[in-house]
Image (tube, rainbow, N blue to C red; front, top):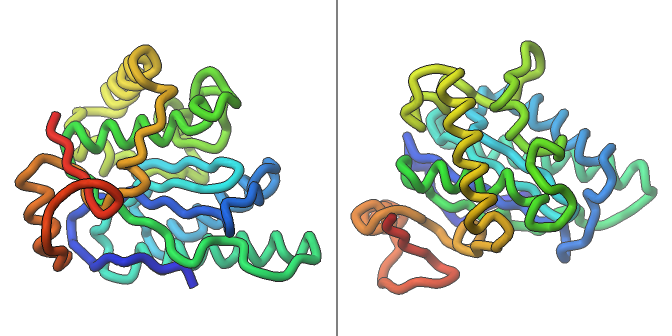
Length: 231
């Protein structure tokens, strides 16, 4: 079952990346991405998962999740949505074998400007891929749900997002987030930033050091094991 090399750290926010097996384009059809969203909603309903943002692409998915509901919620969330999505796909296609990579990758994100950058980065996934010119054109990311919150079947935990991003209301969150996206599109929206999918922790120096200690990570440096960004 999908698993990650990480421990439960209450109050943390995690950027989750889960790739299809051998990076195959198993999610290239809209019906399969919609099923992934159905099971993501089911995870929220069953497990009370705090979903802050999400994005689906042809060969991987991204989530921004709050780790405040207990040590098993995030692993159980990934297990549910990955297991059900892969099972349905294989049954429909008459296919055998793994649908997902065995391990999903989890990056701890400091709740400051790093979180807002992470949110924007995953909403621009399909822009970087050249599929859409703006995230509002893509149905499988959280941008439109932030701009126009759903009355039913909402995925995003808007109240937690308002608190974490220090916006005082839904209207302020909507405007502020729209401005962040527009600014990113103008500056570097089409550039891949591998630290978001390869690092273990992203934040200021103190946050990186403290998180590494809590995770039992020794040594220093940068690269695939961890990354430090001070903005």
